[in-house]
Image 1 (cartoon, rainbow, N blue to C red):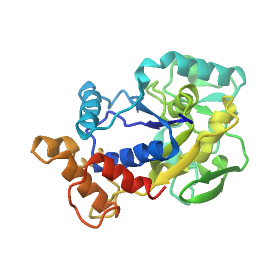
Image 2 (cartoon, rainbow, N blue to C red; image 1 turned 90 degrees about the vertical axis):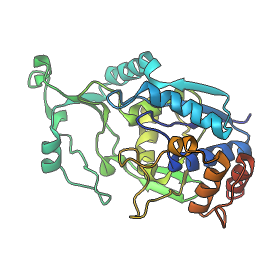
Image 3 (cartoon, rainbow, N blue to C red; image 1 turned 180 degrees about the horizontal axis):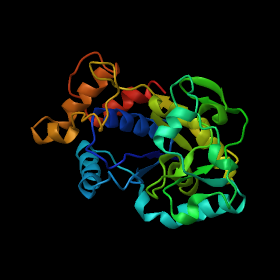
Length: 291
């Protein structure tokens, strides 16, 4: 194997067609580039993660025939996150933020994509001014370097982005004392030796800030990135568990075969001319031909 790629669903609902398309891209990339496949369960959001969803991920992927060489679950990796946080704190790169969502909306500008760009209000608080001693709810933000990050997407081309202007200092631990996606995924990608990241283009905007954070944590060479197109619903929105997207499990339990679901997904993603059933190997080969 020449590297490692990961498939990283979150157990906050059942897998849907968008996950199936993403899995096809990940397994196709692994085949094309001779990569080990790592299955990571991203349950950093413990307020929404459920054990039955964790088990369903393993079961549903197996029913389609997907196989992987290693696996992990974020809830078992707390000590790694604590260690990474301690390293940032030792270098004074982390500070508590007490701003409410209402304050964030009212006091900070938004980027072109509509994302709040935090202006660092709580960074100016001295230790004596900080209400942290009174156990006031807060998150922890990392100080983002004010510089342009250059990175290349294998599908979309070159990007030059400044996280300070995209989002500002971003949270790495939230007000409920949970690790954020941005932080956990960076620590995991470093610790697990992920060399290639293939994921939906809805997460593309996260790339520059993740590269910047990994650099702060000591990674000098970022992963190779590719962001694939999404399947959208009739209104043009991406499929989402929050929006109660129809699940693969519902279809499988109703008697629809994995091959038919693969055919449907490949057709919707414009990978195949019809919805004819496809075995997993053929569906993966269709995607691999585009890489």
